[in-house]
Image (tube, rainbow over all chains, first blue to last red; front, side):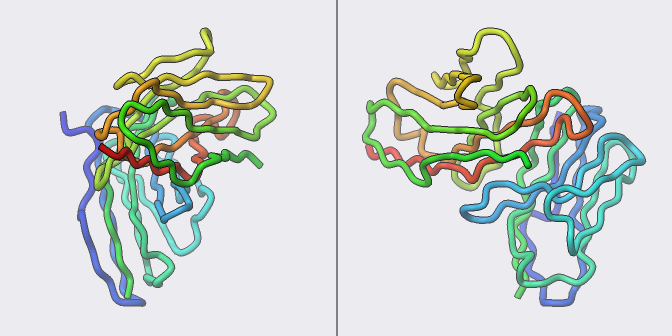
Length: 110
Length: 116
């Protein structure tokens, strides 16, 4: 039982490049989330998916898109990366309110 | 808008000292409350949670938290910290009902450094 997995662990992008962060969970949870963590800012919700087939914006959705590919997988896409998107990205899943977090992806945009 | 305030940005304690980290939230309705811990280089782990019932909740590793509804507070405590408690601690709330049920609102975190 791996829980929530994320790939890649680290990534460096140049401004304007695109990439997709992958997240998968094996706990059969309905809800999945993407957060970004910046020093002194805590975690801020980017997008969430309450169930397969639905996605909604969180607090900081600009510059991101998401896809809930199936019940297990929830990807986050940066179409044109900017230095302001340098951050650590966490995926989480939940069934009844309690969220379980993945190990994170550290992204640097130069 | 909902918000969570953690009063201390960085707390430095010696081993065996007692710990109390403050957390206040702003929300008019019923909430569920959480404390998460993030050890250096690791992901967030749930320390404890409050949904209903006894307002004093016990979590892992000797931590406890008390929900005081009248003060909109959910402070984290530990009677005697250890070096291994060095980590960042996040308070979080989520509305118990409604469309944004399940969406966590996090505080900005408190870094705890424990000196051996």
